[in-house]
Length: 268
Image 1 (tube, rainbow, N blue to C red):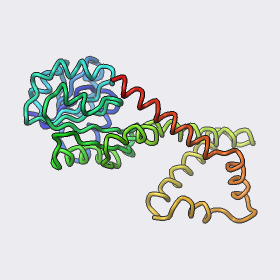
Image 2: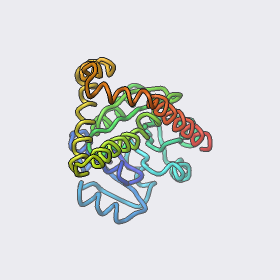
Image 3: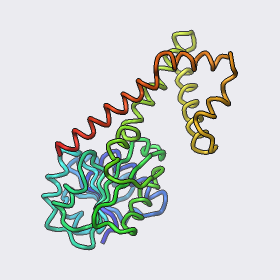
Image 4: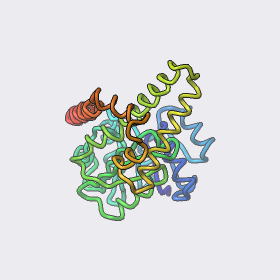
């Protein structure tokens, strides 16, 4: 009997498998993965030593914790395929964006469900995940989800009504930061420094700044003040950001992304 099964063996599943093995939460012989892509299964078996199969039902039959890491548009079909094999001993985890807990519970039955919104920095062990417990989930089921996602980054617990905002801020957020980091690097390139050097400067500065917020206990507003000398270089840059209403642009970015996440969820 395996302790955890993955239905879907893509990049996010691979990141989580790596995390839980490295953290010793589960050993490779306690993990089974199913996928329709044989090449993906071969890689997972070769890299992590986990057992693999192409039969989703086998995962349900042989693992009590089942993490669904399939695309949102196929999750419903996969749940319908395996629903008759769920028991009261199962815990279901889903990282499929836009698929509500209610939808999963309606198909899977009265079993513990935890919905998870991860993000792609989990691939480098710096993920940000939000977990939402379902109607039948108890603290021990939440703890399982927290431990699993802590193995690839940081976790918060939230209510599902906030999941669309979290999708915009954290799920889609990496793309927005990539854009900003890249544009700062391109600006440096236009001013005469080579792009690779500018990108390293920009990315490391973003990383260091994020760590200052997370580790110093100082608010972003105060950190800005600490860096800014009145009438100095940073002050000029701050003024440009304010004059161009960067805060309005960023708010609209998050607002529209949140609205889209909400629309996609309603369609599923």
